[in-house]
Structure formats: structure tokens, C-alpha cells
Length: 396
Image (tube, rainbow, N blue to C red; front, side, top):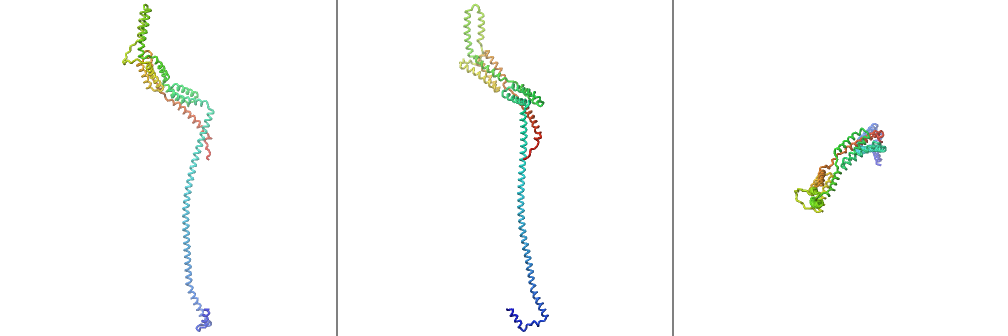
């Protein structure tokens, strides 16, 4: 309505020109001026629009660039994180691989050890089987070797228990005779060792332990027949009186015929009954019957102690005991022929050596054992060279 009013005013005003009065030049001018005005108005607007568009483009590009940078930064962080995780996984994988390799190596070593034990057991079983087979079909030489080894060991035991070289020599001679039957050249070293042991036993000599003990026991049984000094003196006086009485009766019967002969016999008998002894010790009183038993038993104890020393091979105790027995005998007993003989035997026994010095005869045993070891090693060597035993067993 305002526009219509304006149009009405323009048409009614006198200054306004009618369309018929407007010339073409004026109309062209007006049109160009209008275009210029509109163009002048439109040009700043385009610049603003272009600026805005450029600003938007720059802003969008910046925003896109910033977004892209954020994305790239996040991707870089993720890549770094993934890289760290991968490195850790690689480390864990390497640790696991090393553990697996170590476990495999241990398992392999255990498997090798197990296989070696199996091979050793197989060899042992084979060797034992061979030994059993040999025992099942024992030859004549095997029996001889077993017997020789047993006799050699028995000889060593007898030497230690009996303390005598007699039986060990006999046993070693039997061993040598058995080895002669085998007739093997490898047994020469064994026979040489046996010969040396026999020679050492023979050179060692022999101590007659049984003979010494038996003689000491026999001398001990003769002690009761010895006469003590005090009782011998008393009995001598009694015998002298009885002999004198007998001679008087004989004189009354045959005084005229045998007087001279009886005088001679009397003198001879008297010289046997009466003996004069020089004593540098004070005279001891006559012993009682119980004391006489003690004196005799004491002499027996000396002899028994000497016999025990013989069994224990104690040379010093043996010598001291026999020396004490001799001194006791000369002190308390009359030195008649019986006691003199006893003293002589004690002096002879005192000089005897009762300690048996025995050699070591284990050389024969060691030689036999060494021969048996070499013999068995040869058998095992033959078994080990068997191609069946040389083949390796299948590993599990």
C-alpha cells in the first residue's frame, strides 16, 4: 500500500516526467547508472563472500589439518604402545623359547643318560647271561681254577688261625699241582708267586707250640714227686736210723761171715742218704703239710703261666715264668736227680723261641685273582665285540 501511494504521488506530481516524454538516451543512461549502482553495491558483497568462503576454506583446512594431526598423534601413540607391547611379547616369547630350548636340552640329556644306562644294563645282562651260560657248561679248567682259588684262600686263613706254616705249605703245594694240570702259559706268573710264598713259609721255620705245652704239662705232673728241702732232711735222718737198725740185725745173723761186706754197703748207703749242702741263706723252719701244697702249686703256676704265654706268643712272659720256676725249684726243693733233670729241661725250654714269625702269602691269592679278572675281561671283550651289542638301541 505504501508503494501504491508512492506511485500515485509520482504520477500526480508536476515535476515528474511521463514515460512518453523520456528519450532513449536518457533511458540508456538511467539503465547504465542503475547497473553501475547495482554493480557497486554487489562488488563489496562478493568480496565479503569470497573472503568468507576463503576463511571458511582456511578454517576448514586448518580444522581438518588439526584433526588429521590429532589422528596421526593418536595413531603414533597407538603405534608406540603396540610396538612396546610387541617388544614385550617378543621378550616373553624369547624367554619362553629359551626355557623351551633349555627344557628340550635337559630332556635330551636325560634321554641320552637313560639310553646310556639302558646300554650299560644291556651289557651287564649280557655279561651275566654269558656267566650263567658258562656256569651251566662249566669246563674242567673252570673247576680247577675255582678249587685252586679256594685252597689258596684257605691256606692264608690257616696261617692266621693256626700260626703254623705246615698246613699252608701243604695247601699251596696242592694249588701248584692243580695249576700244573691246567697247562696254560698264562699261569706261569701265578705259579711263580706260589713258589715264592712256599719258600718264605719254609724259611720262616716252625715253632712246636704243642710240643712245648705238652712238655710243660708233663713237667708239672712231676712236681709231686720232688722232695722239699726241709722234709728231705728229716726223712734222711729217719732213713738213716732204720738202715742202722737193719744193719745191726744183719750183724747178729751173719756177723762172722759178711762183716766186711756189710761195712762197705753201709758206707755206700749212708753216702746216698746223707748229703752236705752249703747254704748262704738262713735255715727256714720245716713246712707244714698245707704249706708244702702251696709251694708245689706255686711251681705249677709258674709252668702254667709259661704255657699260656706260649699260646699268646708272649716271649718275655714265657722267659720270666721259666726263670722264676727255676729259682723257685732251687730254693724250696732238694736238688736230687729228679729235680736236677727238671731244672735242666726248664733251662732248655727257656731258650726256645715261641713267637712264630709268619710271612704274608697273599701274593698267591692276588696273582690268582688277577688271572681270573683278565680271563673274565677277555670274555666280556668278546661279548662287547658282538654286532648285536654294538647296535644302538632305538631312542624313545
